[in-house]
Image 1 (cartoon, rainbow, N blue to C red):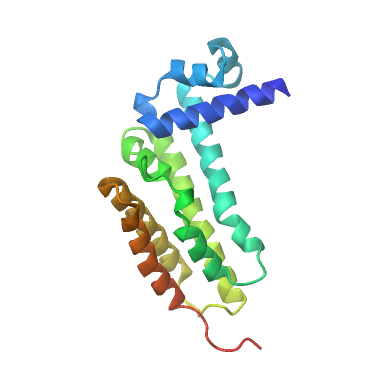
Image 2: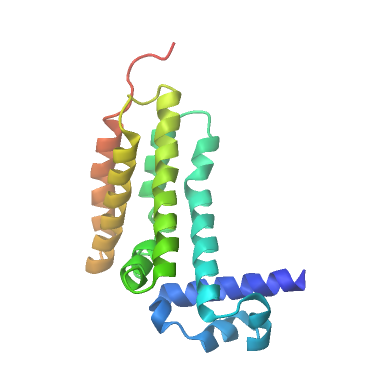
Length: 196
């Protein structure tokens, strides 16, 4: 159990340090200090800082997908409304540090193939999470038939842009204004025909 806790502390600390300072600016000493782990213990789980970073990024971001999007699929109805409510929830966003996906893609994807591969996989999973919600809404006849690949791309891109805008201006209202317009667009696909 202690080994699992040690590994989890390393993952949590590595993710926070990378989110705060980027991968290249992340200090291994700070990661170890904040995790309260010695370097020798780290090497029991990870052979390098990079291996630990990739594991931390993957685990923490996938956990956020599950928390934010996958739970919507467990609902019985109102999938679009639940998606919009989740998008509008500013308490789940960090507008100072921005989106961890975008930050890491911009920093590392063009200089490191391993980061490029994992971030591409994470980004497509992010879009697929949104697509799954849209597909469920169509299946339950809450939404008109449409190209959910393109719509999920549009939603993901708009969301990323809204977070970047708020980060750039320091004004969370910029994010909210974009999401309000996005919500109107999403609801334009709502099926108003009685479900029988």
